[in-house]
Structure formats: structure tokens, C-alpha cells
Image 1 (tube, each protein chain N blue to C red):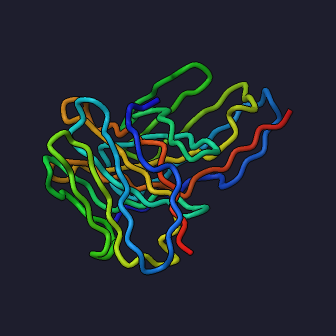
Image 2 (image 1 turned 90 degrees about the horizontal axis):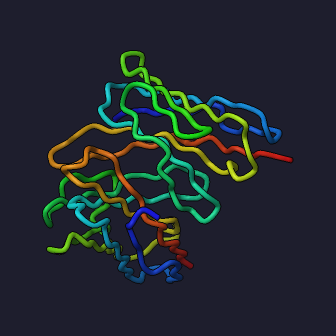
Length: 111
Length: 113
């Protein structure tokens, strides 16, 4: 099956700092999503980005499908950005799409 | 808010019991998937339902089973509960005409004693 590796596993930032999270995957995919999991367990959709670049406010993401990696950029970090960030990839199989998740990056933003 | 709802929020069971978890998909979404997330790990795919039939399964034993109803809502049933079944169970829905993006519910936290 597809292997998904995320780095770094843990990250501590001062408020206002910028960061880059990386996701490497071992096979060709046609789905890639970035999620933020809040302390209550809710997975919040950040980006659906199987290829290309997208931006949403202070967040942006880039996926280079041919080189099998994706990057999530967080600029001007805030304490509310704290939590776990997951990358998940998938292939279309039959009528659906199984997502394989990485192990996540635990982000803590301090004042 | 993703429009995906799950019930109950929390559940405590004892080893050997059976449990049913419920999920209502986002309006217009016909595909529902279930995931298990153990503490400190990423979610693991259990299975997926499309048009009321199982349409893909992960590495979970047969005591994990499910149903999808005509309104696209879904149930996850787990028989003969084991201590290792303690986890957050997440439901995700996807609409066939809206690409591959999946949207997750808030989860059910199951504790097996």
C-alpha cells in the first residue's frame, strides 16, 4: 500500500513565525488533502490539492505530484493554529476513494 | 461545520460487548467511509459504502461490519469488543459529482474497559 511520511513530527513556534510542513508519498495519487485536527478530534479540511498550488489566507499548499511530495506553508502563525496537521492521500478505487494518512505533525504555537 | 454528523459523541463499553455507531453524510454525498484513529496515530481506513454496498475494506477483521441506508446515512457495528478497539471513530462523506474531497464528522470516542 501507499506509504505517507510527514515531517517534522513535532514543531514549536513563536507566534508570528512561519513554518513549512512536508508530506512525502510513495506512489502516484489522484487525491491529496491536508487537514488540521483540533483538540476535540474534528478533522478540518484545509486543502484538497492533488497537484498545483493553492492559497487560503495565511495558509498555502503546493503538491508536486511527479516528485511525490506536498508542502503546507503557515505564515504569521497564531496560537489557534496549534494542533495536529495531517496529510492524506488516495487513489480512486471502484466508486470511492480510500485515504491513507500520514502520522501527522504536532504544532504548538506559543505567545 | 462539514455537514457530517455522528452519534453518539462518547461511548463506554466492556470487553465482549457489541456497539453501533451512526453517521449522517453531508447532503448530496453518496459515499461514506469509516476510519479508526488510535491515540497518537493517524486515522486508519476501515471500509467504505457506496449505493448501500461495501466498496473497499482496510485491514480490519469481519467483526467490524457496516450498513448504508437509502438516505446515504451509515452505521458501523463492532462485535466482540476488545480493549484495542478503544479509539476515535471517524466517518467521512464524499459526493461523486464533487470530486474526490472527503469531509469528516466530529467522531465518536469509544472506550472499551
